[in-house]
Length: 316
Ligand SMILES: [Fe+2]
Ligand SMILES: [Fe+2]
Image 1 (cartoon, rainbow, N blue to C red):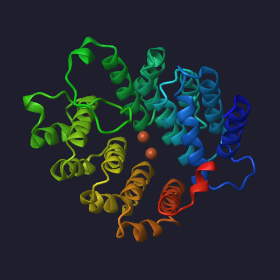
Image 2 (cartoon, protein in one colour):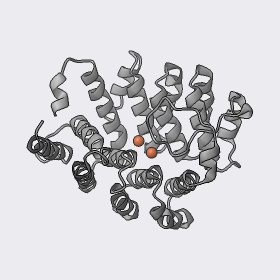
Image 3 (cartoon, rainbow, N blue to C red):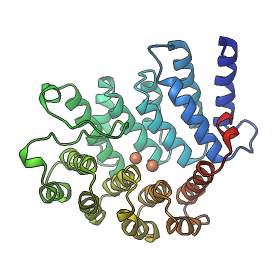
Image 4 (spheres, protein in one colour):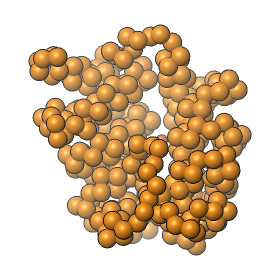
C-alpha cells in the first residue's frame, strides 16, 4: 500500500467513526475505531500516522453517543500512545461529558501510566462533590500509576495474562497465599480493603479462569459500588464462560442497577453469545436506557457479522 492510500484510508476511517454522512451504523463506527486504534498504537514504527489516528479518534468526543465515546476513551488508554493523554484529561475535566465517558477517560489515564495526570486525578479523587464512580476511578488510576512506577512492580512475580488489555489494576502477585480461590474471594468482597487491592484480587481470579474462579467473581455483584460491579461484568466478557450467564442476566434485568453496570452485562453476554443469550439480548433492544439499548444493538450486530461471510465489512 502506498503512503497516499494509507493516508486516504486514515481519513476514511475517521469519516466512518465520526459518522460524517449521518447514517452509519454504530457497529460500523466501532469497527472503524478498532482499526484506528491499531494504527494509533504504532507510534514507534509510524509516529506520524499513529498520532494522526489518535487525533481522529479524539474528534469523536464531540459526538452524543455515550456508548461510543466511552469506548473511544477506553481505546485511547489501550494504545500506550501518550499523545492521547491531553485529550483524555480534557474529557475528564468536561462536565458536558457523561459520567461513564469521564470515568473511562480517567481510567485510560491510569492505563497510560501518565504521571503528568496525577494532580488532576487527585483533584477529582478528593472532591466530595464528585460522583462516586469518578472518585473511585481516580483512586484506582492514582494507585495504578504509582504502582507502575514503583520498585514493587519490578519485584513482583505476576502471571502472564491471557488477555491483551491493560487493566485498571495488575493481578495480585503469584505467591503461596494468592492461589486459593476462597482467599481471593474474601479480598475481592472485603469493603475494608483498599479498592486497588480488591481489583488486584479480581484480575487474579480472572487469570485463574476456572469455573470456580468465575463463580467467585460473580459474588462481587452484591457490592454496593457500580464501578466495582461494572468491572466484574467487563471481566466476564473477557472470560466468556457460560457459567456466568445467570448472574449477568440477573444484573441486566435489574433496572435498579446503574446503566454502566447493565451495559457491561449486555456486552459480556454479547461476547458469550450462546443460543440462550441471543434472545435475551434482543429483549433489550428497546430498553429505556440508551447505553443499554445501544449495547444490545452493537452486541447483536457484531455477533451477526462474526457469523456471516460479510468479509467486506472490515473495509467499512
Ligand atoms: Fe469502565
Ligand atoms: Fe463499558
